[in-house]
Each structure stands twice: as C-alpha cells, then as structure tokens.
Image (cartoon, rainbow, N blue to C red; front, side, top):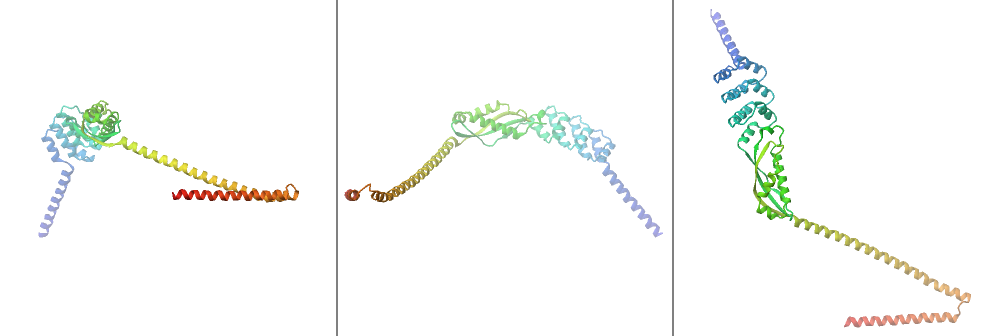
Amino acid sequence: MIEGITTGTIGIILLVVAAFILLAIFFTFVPVALWISALAAGVRISIFTLVGMRLRRVIPSRIVNPLIKAHKAGLTVTNNQLESHYLAGGNVDRVVNALIAAHRANIELPFERAAAIDLAGRDVLEAVQMSVNPKVIETPFIAGVAMDGIEVKAKARITVRANIDRLVGGAGEETIVARVGEGIVSTIGSSTNHKKVLENPDMISQTVLSKGLDSGTAFEILSIDIADVDIGKNIGAELQTEQAEADKKIAQAKAEERRAMAVATEQEMIAKVQEMRAKVVGAEAEIPLAMAEALREGNIGVMDYMNYKNVQADTSMRDSISKIGKDKTQNDITQD
C-alpha cells in the first residue's frame, strides 16, 4: 500500500511539472499578456497573428506596442506595415514616434516616406523635431584674405530647418558647413579692404545667403549670422618678404656664378701668359743659335757682334738704374 501511494504521488508530481512546462512554453510562444493589452487599448489584433509573428521571428512587442501608441494618437497604421518595416531592418518605434510628432505639428508625413527616411539611415524623429524647432550649426573660424593682403577670420552660426521632402538623397550638415565656408572665403577675398569686412560683417551673411547654398541638401537655410570676426596675419607682407628673400637668393646665386666665371677667366689668362712666356723664352733661346749661324756664314762680323753685346749691356745698366730710382721714390712716399 505504501508503494502504491508513493507511485501515485510521483505520477502526480510528474504531471504537475509537465503541465507547468507546457504552460510556460505556451505563454512564451503565445504572448497572451500582449494580446490582452492590445485589446484593452482598442487595437484589434488576432492571437494567431501574434503567433505568426513568432514563427516569422518577429518580436511581437516591437510591433504591438508602437501599434497601440499610433492608435492612441489617432494614426491609421496597420500591423503589416510595421512588421514589413521591422523585417526590412528599420526602427519601428522611432518611425511611429516621428509620425506622432508630425501629426501633432500638422506636418504631412506618410508612413511610406517616414519608413524610407529611416531605412536611408537618417533619424526621422530628429528630422521632424528639426522641422518644428530649427537647429543652429556653428562653423569653426574660417579664414579668408582680402585684396589688401590682410587675413580675416569669421565664425558663422547657420540656422537650418530639415526639409523632409529632401531627406532621402539630400546632403548633410557637412555640405552646408563646407558651402558656407566657401561663400565666406569668396566674400572676404572679393573685398578691396579688410576694414570693410570689419565694419559691415552683415555683408558676408547677405552675400552667402543669396547664393542658395541649401540646394541639393536635406536642409533649408533660414539665416546665416556672423558670430565673430577677427584679424589674422598680414599675408600680403609675408608673401612680399618671401619674394624679396627669394630674389635675394637668386641675386646671390647669380653673383656667385659671375665670380666663378671671373676666377675661371683669370686662371685661363694666367695659363695663356705662361704659355706666351714659354714661347718668348724659346724664341730667346734661338737668338744665340741664329747669331752663331750668321757668324759662320759671314752675314755679320765680329765687330757687329761686339756692338750687339755692348747694346745689351747698356740696356741692362739702364734697367738697373731705373729700378733703383723707382725703389727710392717708393721709400720716400712710405716715409712721408
């Protein structure tokens, strides 16, 4: 009898455990609590639809909760639209929040456009909020050089509003900042004097704003305000200094080239002088031979030869006397 009671007790315990496991699996697979919440909120959705979401590996709460939110806000959105957007990799909750914000602000935003914006990688909720509350983008200091060579630095604040119609395929904030920077540089560069820019900074914002820089972007530029203007370097003077230094180096190089050519010419002249002296010495060496040949052939006599030697001695004596006179004159000048 004890064995029968023990066996029956074990069987009951096993049945209770099995029933508990089955119920746990059932309530895990079938979101009954979520279905009840949807019915309580007035959203009619079948329990089998929720089971089908489980089979399609869709988290039901990611669809039902935004659906309840949209229904309470008075939006007409179906669960198929939300589920298809979820399966495409979109953020269903953010899209529904954006639709609610657009509906409250009287901005026309269909679900298809909001889903396309979200799938394009943009924050559709932030775009709607920016349409209602414009955003201010502050640029860094942008430097430009006026015609007088003075560098002018300007910082701008750009007030933009999101253009929902151009969010898909439109350029972002970086393009806006780059275009405004280009306009600032162009405006400063076209100024004849940097003082005009300092006296009237509105000239920059008016010129830049008139160029339609928001074309092809996801934003609409409302205003461009110059927050700060500062003076930078004297670029013109620096360029002139660098040019003068370059001209100086060029002149020095040319002077060095001329000096090298003069030295080469001098050395060439010295070599030619040495060459001519060698020719003179060679010619003088031939004179005794010519005299001997003339004596042998009887073209000159002994007396003629003696007269020639006397003339040479006389010439040598005169050269010696003239050298002594020159040395004495130089010594007198030095002493004075």
